[in-house]
Length: 253
Image (cartoon, rainbow, N blue to C red; front, side, top):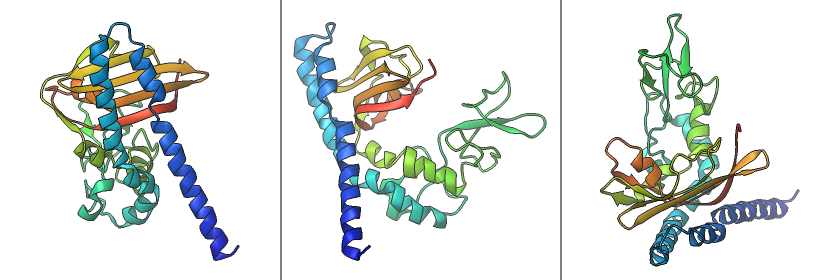
């Protein structure tokens, strides 16, 4: 293979990845679902769609970092110290908004065996420890068998699973009052119940729907992540932009 041929293949792969990213962010079905909500006043739908457009514009600013994360993190993470909780400042736009070492918690039984709480919930009364705590000695739910501070767990976390989430939050909107649900069920989940919700806080909105698609869950999530802010302790903070027109994930039911 000549260098020119290799360059053309690389450019073709890059074009395919960008096209796939744009296809996943396409909001046509989301807008149709919002427009079909019978319990939302028509005059409010225009404000909702304007919010979705603003979120999509903010999300597009993350694409360069999102799409390059698998390669950039492959080159950067081997040089990040194990005790670090953040990426070096030069790579802050690829960082995670929670921690470089994940968002989970774990617990230790009497035999010294550690468990991730998402894999095995802690028994009542047993204290849990953040994955970012230097004393944590177990693995993590997103990289089973690997410590959260290991290269592989960090690569999965910021290079594959949660790419450029800090930048997404930096481009988010401030939420000063706890979001309220104005349509649907805020308890929807990829394992059921299925349906939709529409959250509102001031001029910010978050529309999300989850439905069965064969053996998978079809997820649409657009606007600003009011779901996360709503479930936080004080119900306020920065809501990151989200523009997922379609995403498929495994479901258990």
